[in-house]
Image (cartoon, rainbow, N blue to C red; front, side, top):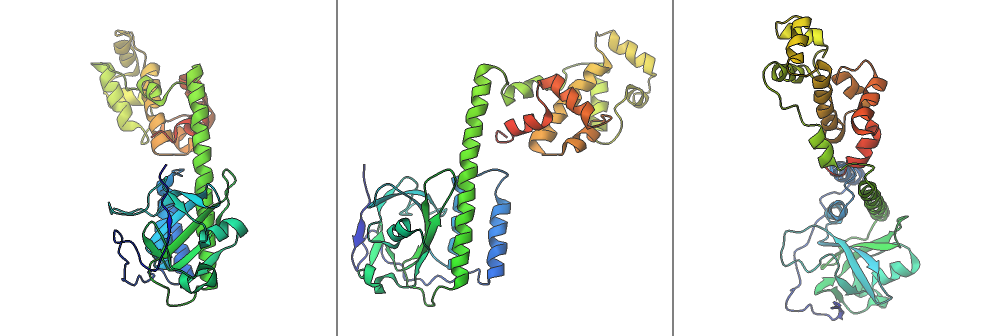
Length: 335
């Protein structure tokens, strides 16, 4: 196991020269920061609580504070922490990556692990406890702000933002409140990630026992009927009318310029019933509406021309053995 050591030195290693560009915060007022964080969360896909979601929050923090780097750290020992997430970067030479081990002894991050409080320094080397300039994997750490992340599903972590150039102004009370809000958002995503993983394990167990099919199996079961002649024309009319008009046999027959009795007779000649065709078309669209479009049960019931929500629920149970709401909970993470 390779551990990247904390370099106590006034000079950065040649591999990663000191960056002299002064980064300026792009999000200044507190109200703008709240809006910015909200947009990041709102832009995260529904229940997509993965590391990329956390990285988007870390990116937002870098933009707010005007810093180059952000890390989410999990403590392995008093000396070493693991990088759980970083801000996203397209730079192949980015010195930080998930799973990386770094030394945190005698750094502000260690202090946060120890006392659980937020810590911030506009010029770290000027602090007696950190008198020498230090670097994480070759990146000088001068300006620093960090706090504890407390989730209900994991041990406490540290989220920190830092820059290789000192900060001109002192950190404000709004800066502290901002990083604490960021930490709460990260904790929420961690908990959702754990819940999502547990739910998938439960689903896999149900699939293994055969009590529930896979989504692919349901999609195969709900394919539109492969029929020809009059039955194919019925399916086409039903598809056109889904969500727009009634799906009764009389209405479909009228659109086909046939009487209801003639349509029934033509279908019977191929051993197909109108109710079977309509059920299959409804089943096909119901999965799309539930999983991909996230429509409400009432909206789906109306679009598929059921008399009420209960009628649709009963039909869906007949098709799958599951209620529409249970089906959605099981498969919303698989599309």
